[in-house]
Image (tube, rainbow, N blue to C red; front, side, top):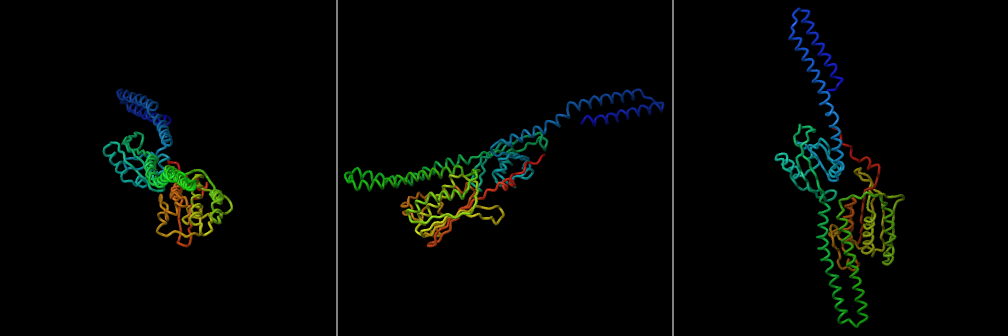
Amino acid sequence: MPANSARPMWLGVTIAVAVIVVAEAVGGTVDVALMISASLALLIGALLGRGGQVALLPPTESTSPQRHAIAEALLANIPDPVILVDRRVVVIEANPAARRLLPGLKLRHPLSFSLRAPDVLDGIEEVLRTGTPVRTEYATRVPTERAFEVQIGALPLPDMPGGGEPNIVLFLRDLTEARRLEAMRVDFVANASHELRTPLAALLGFIETLQGPARDDPRAREQFLGIMRTQAQRMTGLIDDLLSLSRIELHEHVVPTRIVDLGRIARQMVDMQAPLAGERGVALSVERPEGPLPVLGDRDELLRVVENLVENAVKYGGSGGVVVVSLHRVEDPNGRGARIELRVRDEGPGIPAEHIPRLTERFYRVDTASSRQQGGTGLGLAIVKHTLNRHRGKLVIESEPGQGTTVHVSLPEHRPEAEEAALPEPPAGR
């Protein structure tokens, strides 16, 4: 109780005791015992009231907000998602990492509104029932695949609503990178052993021929050395593509944060592919609007995307004689902001419809012999797909036999004002 409110209260009590004593005196029936008892009661009450003001009340007013501020600061600096719920599984607190993982997470709302994971919700119920910590797994599919180990435990908080009843804390440890690294090792060994077998067998065959029958044949030696050089270059390109694809998949869940101009990237890559187009008699051009076309992205990875698309169009669609790279700014019909679209169009033989859904698979080729003859590794469009997944982009391939092929790549346009409007609101006070 504050000191300023205690003083009027004790003044009233004193006056009440005085009135009783005066009434007794006027009535002529003064009771000495009554007067002594009233005086002692007044003295004891004053001492107890003064002690309560000094020793008990101020700490409650000063320490609780400070402790809550410290707890919120600790949560904010934990890089992994942390969520605190009460016994009704209603969210009490969540750190910024948890809000980024679950955009629909709101304080004072049931956790099931934003986290629809039966294993996790069942684990919370088990902890509430038994008090024993539980470990389970949680995986997301959209916008990218991520894996978490969820540690669920009871957390008594005497200062929180509920009078000391244990609340539940969820700690989500990100296993995505570890899982991807392990998958990368397995895939690399499997793919390398499968795809390198053919060029290695060719190299060994030519080496044995040069050491044997063609040992003294200069013409055969020159021919075989040329083929061996081509096979060695193919193996080098294959290993480079496998490593590049593995690196992209490893960080596919990490959204890029740098601003790059997609128009400049397209212009640069068209200039770099001009000599190849000239050798094949292909007219390569670029069309783009005035001004920058900003997107959030990794410049080297986006360069690789445009390089793969333009190179494929020149090599496999170049028989039509024309390849056009164009850029457009397209408004989203759902009102989610504009997108920057890159289109690569050729007038080549086209692709049958049954092949289009599988073009982004590793080592899938419409024509295996033609692809290997052109120096392709079968990984170009797989790299494009996983790069666009990381950049929250879209890939659409349109083609008909005899009508050419058009590849559409779209990325969200970078708008600083839209990002500021989308920032999460600070948590409401308790």
